[in-house]
Image (tube, rainbow, N blue to C red):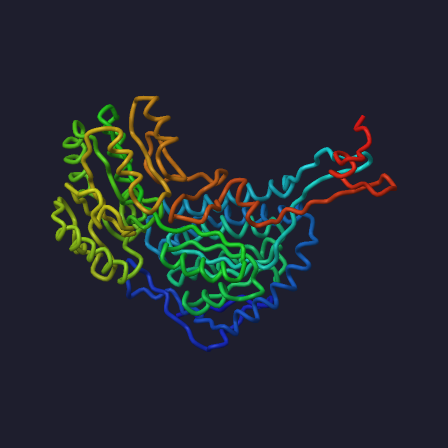
Length: 502
C-alpha cells in the first residue's frame, strides 16, 4: 500500500507527527487506496511560514500571468479527465458519470479563472476636485486557508483555490479526510502547470486537529470552509474573534415543488436525479418533495417504482445508478433518520435499510428511501440528512408550497415545476434560497455563476462566478492630486469660503 505525503515548503514531506490514516474505497472496504498523513499543529506552522514567502513572490506576478498558469492547469485536467474521474470514484463512490462532471467543473473553473486575470476590474471615477484622479483596484489578502468536503473532491477545491490564486494569494489546502488522493493529484497538477511551490501547501489530517489549527492561526487572514452548519458555526466564532475574512458554505434542506400544472414525467426525472444523485450527499440535494394535491398520487406512485429499480453498486461499473455512502458513520446517521421518520408516523414506502446483494457486501450502501405523509415541521422534514432519503409533503396551494419551502433554517437551493410563467417568477422572488430552478431539480450549478445560500446555509459570500473574486481580494482606493496645492474636498467645494465650482 502506497504511503502519501503532505506538500509543504516546496517538497513532499512526512507529517511531524509520524502518524498516518488509511484511505479506503467506500464501495469495497477491502480495497485500500493508500496511507495519508495525520498532520499536526507543527505542520501548519511550517506551511504558514512557507506560504508567506510564496505570497510575497506571487502577489508581484501580473494577474494575466497568474491566469496563464491556471489555464495550463485546466489543460492538464482535460488530458487526465478520465483518470482523475476513476480515482475519484474509487475514493468517494459516486458513479463515473458524476465524477467526470466533477472534473469538468474544475476545468470550467480553471478557464474562467484564467480569463479573470485580465478582468480584475476596479473603478476610475471623477474626483470632485480639479487636477485630481480617483480610482479603486483589487489587491490580494495574503495566506488563505481552504478547507473542503468529500462530496466534490475536485470541483469544490477548484472553486476556492483557483480564484484565491488568481487574485494573488497563497493557499494552504486541507481536503476532507475521505478524499485525500484527489487533493494530492490536484496539487500535483498545479505544480506541473508552473505554480511556484511556496504558493501552495497541502496538509492532510483530521479536521479537529489540522483544520482547527488552520482556522485559529493568526497569520492566515482569510478562510473558506465548506461543511456542516454546526461546524461552520464554530469556525465562524473563531474567525469572528480574530477578525478574519471568512466564507462559509454550509447545509441545505432543499425542496422541489411540483404543482398541478407541471409536466409529471419531467418532474419525476428531476426528483430522482436531485434526491439520489451522489447518493443524496450534496448540499443542494433534493431532500424534500412538495407535491400539490392533484398531482400527488401519480408522481408519488411512479417515484417509488423508479426508486426501487435503481441499481446500486461500484460507481466504476457500467449501469450503476447509485454508489455507496462515504463511510459507516454516514450510513448510521441515515439509519437513525429512518427510525426518526417512522417514530413521527411518516409512511416508509421504499428503502429504509442497508442494501444487500452481490457486490454490495463490503460497501456502505443504502437503499434509495422515500417517505410519504411527512409533516411540515417534523425532524425528517427540517433537518439535513446528507443521504438518500426523500421526504414527500402534500400541499393544496402554491402559497402553502412556498411557505413549506421557506420554513426551514437553511436556504440554499429550491426548484419549482410549473407551466405558469407568473408562478415561476413569483418563485424566483419569494422563495428564500440563494438558488431557484424552474423546471429543473435543485442540483446543477454552473461554474460562471455565483453559488451559495441564505439563512444558516452561509454567511453571505458566494462561491463561483464573478463574486468570488471579491472575497479573495481587497479594495484599495487611490487618489492622485496633481494640482500643486492643498485641496480639502468637501471643505473647499462646499464650505463657507468655497470658491465657484465652475
